Length: 146
Length: 146
Length: 75
Length: 75
Image (cartoon, rainbow over all chains, first blue to last red; front, side):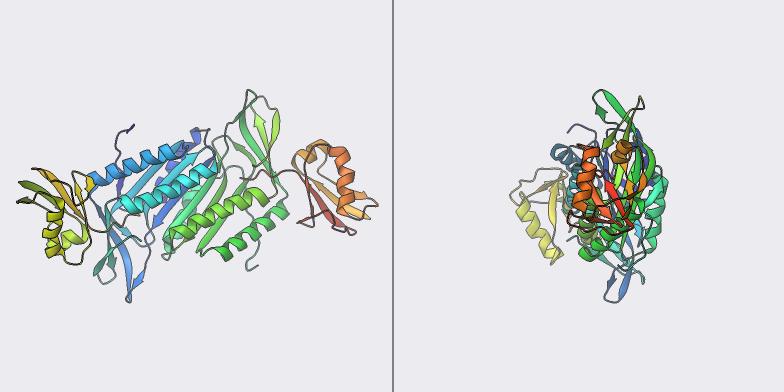
């Protein structure tokens, strides 16, 4: 554990502007040759004739931030990265809005891409984050990652 | 060949704002669940004691746009994608600025990530784009992809 | 022994609460799982103690923070 | 036979021009490569005719647009 545990959660959707700002901040790091960005977007899935209009994300926040921290540390060990950022929404994110932002940077493309994929899979599997899929008629069901 | 050949080239660096705008345009497509974005950034490599300060990109533009088109068509065949966008710089891109923007969107993460990686490798291998690495003292050398 | 229990997602919904303190005579996680399976029926869940996932052999201690975690849905 | 030649990157630099029309007696790409190797020495290049990469057996036609492409550096 080399760094302080960060708060990964942002209230509501992750905006395109936040992503642009994050990209712009990396332009001073001229040893970077490749960035990979993964964005999770809420899908308007149709389930038994009803459309998902939003997901209400909740989490076991203290544990989740610790898990995200461990995932980050393990990625820094496995891959030769310059930078890595993870943000996840909490609360309501509407269909079409972004709920997960994973950003890896490296001198070379392979490391950035391998690390980004690793992070996304680890997050889906290990982070105690829960999602209530809210339908247009205000009924809901609980999302489960596959 | 199902679509018109697009112009992939933009003058100078690709800005974070352009990337944000492109992301924002996808928020109406509520069948998308995952985006993958690859960004190539010009590195200030040190070569024999001299630092790269910019790359001046040129291309065989008619052929390059045709090749980018073929790469796009082949990716649409191989992967289940909702959207795909490619932009490449021409002219001067300074160290720290972005010269390549590849953007794939799909219902599911695996397709978006596999397609993005495929596109980046194909572009590096097949697009007739040339890069003059300009050093701080205005001498130069020609970049070669590996 | 006092356990500080935390419930999340569909489990908080099923139990109609997000947290409670229980004074119970349970000493390992296997017993705790057995206790809750009665209430939660077909909901799958994992147990975290003091923010770490534990398996069923884990021995509980007084004042442990014990979380019942339904399937994850991050991303 | 007229060939419309196009040069790029380090080849344009080495030949000090970006395009020219040549009236030459060359009928296939192998001969063209041989002709240019003399001028370009250790520069690797590929040949595209009318925007498609071709191999050395390709037969050239009058008015073909023939591009000499040095190693690619996109991305």
